Length: 333
View (cartoon, rainbow, N blue to C red):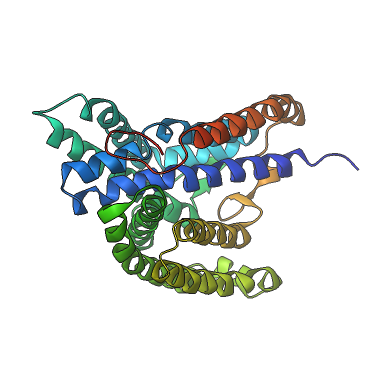
């Protein structure tokens, strides 16, 4: 039996996207939380907690996009034209946010403007990622292996709600991260904020879970067909995570809120995968339909076998070096 290269590449790209969401999500979440903490000292600590690692987190987005282009060119040629406008806006937002990281600590008079660039860049990038996910779930109009929809087909109530839900989710990740990495009054305020955000995110997950099968019959068929045996544990585990999260916050645990929030994202991602599998371009183009020639996938796979372990090692090392609590001067202890 031969190797199923499209399946291997689907796993690689899904892994890269998941790594981006959970790793860049918390530093985008810190930007979303910025307006709620106007004191300069608090903002310095919040930014210093991710300053050494934020740019490395975005490596996974590049890896996922490049992998999609190389392994599934048909999917790339459909998804990119369908989402050109939101993706361009997302990149602009990420650019302003990245510049804010570099310029904020070197400025005095213009610091409030860089604070705004960081906060609004994080908010806009997050909202667009969620809206793009909603548009992906909706599916794309494809005629003769090309995108046949309009530039604003991605705009819908469902996509907009997904964008707002992801804003809450990333804010929750950022809150969990800051509970773990900070101390004192800032940490106490994060403890107070976390249950409110967590309950809001849980409500958003419930709404999306009800909205999706109602609005998209093909997904409903998957949920309540043979896939139900794989899917039914997901909502039960989500509920368990929410309950454990509230208990962890009340018990003033430091690491558990962040870990449980990551678990919520992974479970939601797993539910999405079960809902859409094996389509790489919903509603009907599978990973095998969209794959590049086996020779191309095999050649690229050799590079990935070296690249992914290297990324994992330097990521783990950077997190190890900058472990511990952070203060306003950027020192970890």
